[in-house]
Length: 136
Length: 119
Image (cartoon, rainbow over all chains, first blue to last red; front, side, top):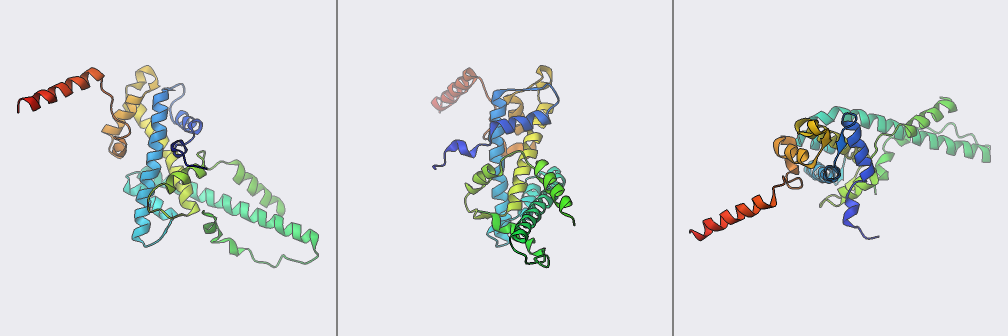
């Protein structure tokens, strides 16, 4: 599948929704403005990525991490985002952990049914750094 | 911890949407940046979330700052003005240039030519 230029844009429907939710009720947004904001958002991603990558390279790391993104926000003078980002990240991590624990639990239950071996002794703290493997 | 509590937790996590923008698309854009090799999942989430916050911030600031209040519409020129006037949006001036009338542009070209001729 070839990478077309359109693929570097964000979905219009979602962008429109976010804009509408941010503005007071009843305010219209011109088509041109919507398109422009969408493009601005893509540029923002690139700028933030490049900035975050500088921090990662300074620390001699090849993987961009959460701290790099936060540092990038500060660098770009978007300190107003820092607190909401921290809170969102916490909620996200909890959600990820919950999902993992749930699928672990499901797996254990399945195995319990198929065999009579008691697996409850297995500890659960191996999931700590597992999320790092997910990136592709 | 009983099974029920675990199920409830998962319900909550999957129902409450953390982000609206698709992280896969954001990752695509991030990967197009040179020198970027690997992106940690949390970093991807934060970038996606930050982009949403940015869209809200850009839209609202441009609207407040612009003349849209009278017409009750957020227009392109509101955005272009915000890019020029607000420091944090300066990086957008290239993609959100202010528009000028064609005749004004042609006029300025003419004047430039006159200056060259007089040299």
